[in-house]
Length: 338
Image (tube, rainbow, N blue to C red; front, side):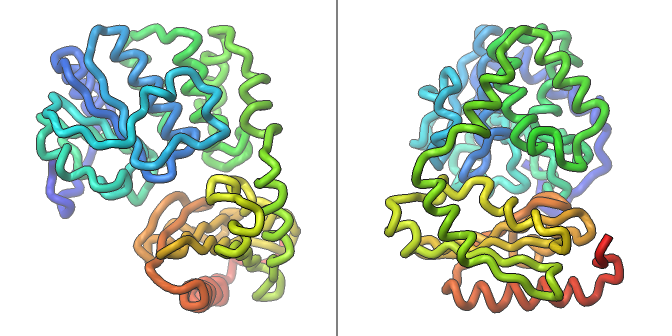
């Protein structure tokens, strides 16, 4: 792996070619995504896994955290293991991991890999791989993976198209976020042309929710408060909330987006109290770069969606993060009502 301080100028086409060479010559692959995997991570991993398997490669897919419940309908999620393998691999491909630590404690296995590949679309990504395919303007990692297959002239099947569509539709918020481009929609169109039932995928992901989600949503909305003249919304979910409804962090997926609905709100911060830390998630309508806010607290992400984890009490996390966001809002002359 490269040293973290080395951030070279990357020629994406050249990096695609390097990865294509690795895929053709290597035999054993280790795939991993970030902690608390989402649709983009799972979809991208499964798509690469499927293509590599069709090429006769031996592939191990690893996720330290379990596959989200709402993605268990996808075929082959049973092949994703949570126990880190001890054997050597010709190559490791990390997806949506701005740093190797975003995937958990991966150092032991990465040290045994001949080539480390970093595929990411976060602008906070560190160029730690031997090959770095990082494109911050891409809507999703799945969009980048499609480009890889296209550049290699690989015809993907219906199942692989399903995986990539899941990655794209979840990371773009059903193609609503500003990272959605004409190219994004063109790729989605090509995926849909394979014939999978995209409307069923949307139903599984967006229209089917467990009762625990609805219960915790109600508690989260009760906690909703506004600051900075309505520009900042704060949502808090406590350990007691989870205990009261038998819920877990997975059941909070998408809740933060409700905080953006009021016209005046420009930024939402959601605090989720966990056993030994506080998970902090940020959303923005684009006038405040929350990726920089998250980076200040050791996290990362996108301009409009990011997060971090704090080793602090809930009260401490709320105080420090809220104060910092209020400071940034006050310093920005752009945060005005439309």
